[in-house]
Image (cartoon, rainbow, N blue to C red; front, side):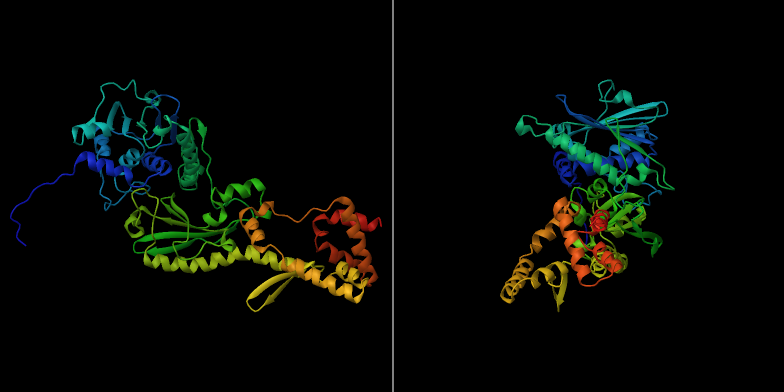
Length: 487
């Protein structure tokens, strides 16, 4: 093809910059993207600062990193400052050279960056209203820094990012209601505690970074509960992909009976255990995506305790299809095949936590009130007519009454609210428990059951073994023993 002429078609500044606002950031992902730059700059401390009460609310992100010269600041303010195909330094959390701008524009119409490096202090401002008015890519440089929010907090080196004109966070339709912004700020703090938990904890081989929200320290949230004794750690596996190494490790969280109610609720997260199971992908120890099986498996109740940590280097962004927000990814083909096999292993481990408990209850319970019946592919539960209490009561009835009594037991079994039980156990297992018997009723049942078993010529040892393995005696065995010995 022969080219006869050429013409430069620069994008309209006002149109493109408004489009850049809608890449899909939330406040949480936008703040996290800016903090990536702070960590890459070697910051020891990152402070999230908010002013939600004034007429001109603002959000600030302040760090004590290496700061920037004016030349470096200008380059940082340029949309697309680095080619995503360029090789990144180890621990560089950047990706496209767009994060500072796109993240900031997604939440505000005014971006201020004040930075200090050595003796040089520089400041630059993107104001979308100025861009729209001038219809050009205009960056402004203030002559004075005195009125910049939190400007006086900048240390001998570091960078302060300030967002103003928070049109995406304040509901102007309700007279500038700030409730939505305050709620999102709190959610952002929790998000940072998860995304940067390995930096906040100062993991071995990783420099600890302190973060805070308006002076309140952020605490690392380890989604694997890895320090709990009941957490099952799988071996760390090294998967080689080209010149890169991917580290994979499986975790099975403790059953709810092994942790406190507070910990159980905390590690469930806002969306619950079922939504939070799956792969947790980290890029240079920074969480990118979590709570997904990448379409390789379904999220089920029996695998809800299964979590897999994947560590990838920043040189694999293209292969994993990391997006601008660093909030989505897709594993490359060979890695996907390996993850599929891992799912089978980790899923079996999580299921075993529940299934083995079920088997243990059935095999150890020598005095079951309920029995599990499996008929081909169907499983149902029914009251055990051979239970000594039922059997003894039935023997005192006439034949006709016995028939009616057995039908009554069948009716109770057939009316078991399986769906409701499953729903309750899935959502709040720690709150589901058998009906509590009062002291008088419990005492009467203990005496009657003991007497029945004694009449059937069971030894003292067998009676205690049978009763101690069955509810309602098992959970109150010390109380039951006292009643037996005082009979």
